[in-house]
Length: 196
Image (cartoon, rainbow, N blue to C red):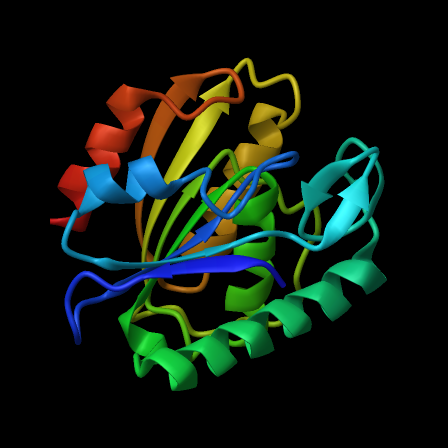
């Protein structure tokens, strides 16, 4: 997997940056700078190609996930992050997942599969179109969700499903709404205030 690692301060929390469809490992670096310039940064590039665009997992169409591939890629990404944690000497619980769109979706996958590993996430334009039987314990998880009104990719009912997914499992959820499928300066500022 292609990635970048910027260490600002030994022992500081680490942003794990997960881009949207067509993005790269550096896409969310300026967002990370805004959220907290002192945090270390691990930016990862999705290694699935869709019409020449980088993604974190396959799909059969808009909002139609290849669940088998998502399961496989989620595990692969998790193991990759674990490897980097050893290599660069940081703890999994010091990670703040930061995702946009496709990156948010694989972040949710990892959080559901490894509920004890991730304690904080800022997810922009997430979509996770499935009912999950298992009730993971997210009581020590803090999450910021940025959701879109009139989002052409994520219907509002699906945004609400993501909110419920975290709330039903006891997470401390902060939500913000933007217009469409976007990551605005304004919502980035709200995420920054949330992180403080």
